[in-house]
Amino acid sequence: MTVLRRVVGVLLVVLGLAAIAVATASATIWRPSDVVTARAAASDVAMMTTAPGVLDLVGDEVTLTARARDGAPVALVLGDERDVAGWVGADPVVEITGLESWTTLATQAGDAGDGDPTPAEEGLPDPTASDMWIASARGEGTASLTWDAPAGRVQALVVVPGADGVSPELELSWPREVSTPLLVPGVVAGAILLLVGAAVLVRELLRARRRRTAVEPDSAAATTPPAGVPSRDTAPAGSPAPGIAVPGDDSALAAGPAAAGTVSAAARSAMTRRELRELAEREAAEREAAEKAARAAERRARPRTGMLPAVRRATSTGPTPQVPEPQETPTAPETAAQPSSPEATRADAWRQAWGFGETSWAPYQPDRDTESAGTSKPAADEAPAADETGGTTAPPTSTGGAR
Image (cartoon, rainbow, N blue to C red; front, side):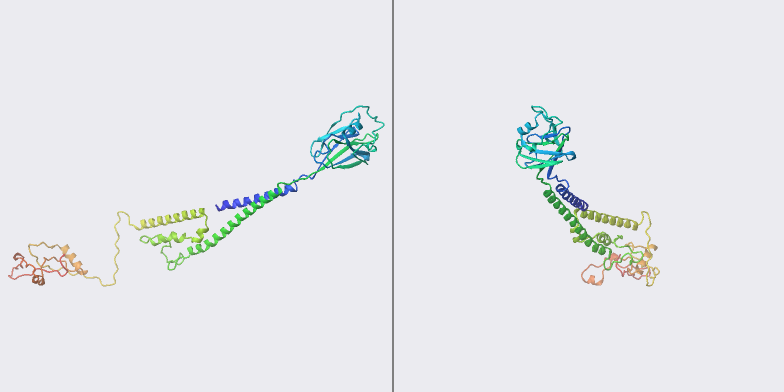
């Protein structure tokens, strides 16, 4: 998402600069000229005329310029359509009918009028000598005049008087107002795009700086172990590194991923949704890896199936207890069963040596206090048995209680 915002910001800046450049070029380089100038030249004739409506084709104001090669005299007059047609008569003439392009006038051969054409050896007369024209001008090689009123049916007549046989050339110029409609909208739109793009880029740069500032302290805190926890460099040889699970120790499994991927609330608030999602996926992967490592360590610590458990010999600083020799156990009454095997006798001796008391079996004999409290006396068949010498033998008692 951050990369997309930066790309959008760069595109907006580029589009804004392009819009400003195009708008400026439309008002300077690509701006049309303020004056429309078109030309036309005759060939093999000494007269040129304009059709009605040509003089005000572009604007009401028009400047006419007539030229003749080699500095020959040229006359330029403006007159009514009938006066121009009467002056031309049957002589050959080139008529200008309009604009072929913004720089070229369209021409055609004029219609011959009534009467006889002027002989070539005499040459054409000079029209400026007559006073029937609206305006006239004469010069050597060039003549010019300006007409700033609606032309209507007014026509222009260009004549090269004399018998030189030089063809004239006519140029018409119209001033006009040229507008630049793309200048203001283009500059405004380009400036807006430029400002928006610059704002996006500056915002992304500030956010990146804040993220770096927030992550650097967190990374330093994550790499520094807490108080009382040895680091990788200072931990004793053989001790597990922080975050590595040990069988029976759940604190490392709980603290390992959390300590490695801890990010402060300020750093999270500066992150985008994509970065938060990637952080959550990374933390989940770290937790899963830690759990797998803990399970693998636990499996390695377990004994293999079918293996005999190895019992380690306990070390004791005190003296080794001595097992007394088995003693003869008094004969129990024939009515009660008691263990008399050598194995049982030896086991009782071991228990007595380790402080578990005597384990010889004896029937229950109430004491005198119990008898005085009203308990029943032993039956006659439970009386002490007489031995072979004629005396009585007391039943054996247990100091550690009946087993």
